Image 1 (cartoon, helix red, strand yellow):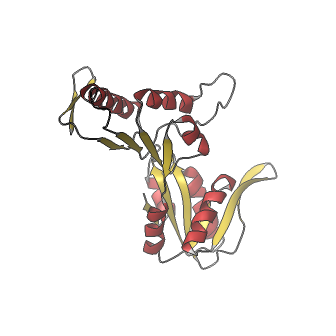
Image 2 (tube, one colour; image 1 turned 135 degrees about the vertical axis):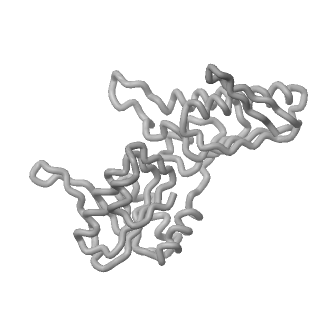
Image 3 (spheres, helix red, strand yellow; image 1 turned 90 degrees about the horizontal axis):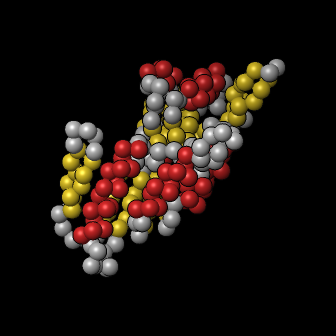
Length: 233
């Protein structure tokens, strides 16, 4: 349907090859990928300028900036708003975001909807022989509880608290002798999961596995892989 060309200076240029509806499926985990999308959509809009019946749909599978879903301090930019405004300017008829980090994503992006990640969690759950689900923190609990009910699986929450002014991970249930699957949306550096896996094993967990929807591992993979038996992305 389209071709992309990159020039020596890094510029991207798109060409549309037919008059069909536009469906773009892309990770969108970098600003460069957002500009690729914009190039394709601009070329498609120009070709379809006399045909209002054609529809455009954008599916984003690892949207950059999802964790920056608010202004963290007075001097910091609201990055997700900037990214969402850029996407909105492309004026897609439909936008779908795979397992958005928060409701703010869908609130900021026009005509957007969520792509549920349940089928991928189920694949991991079955692959791991129906383990005990672990919610890694309070922010993930609501979604992990929804998943556990659909799977008919047991769920134990974990949380980070301060004991004697030192951070400590508390496992709020019995994991002794059990296979555990941590379920979350984003793995950035992965250190939180590494410490959680150690805490689970210290409490007697037989095996610890990890499911994340958006696997980035920006600070490396080796340390995490040493402490978690399986990473499925």
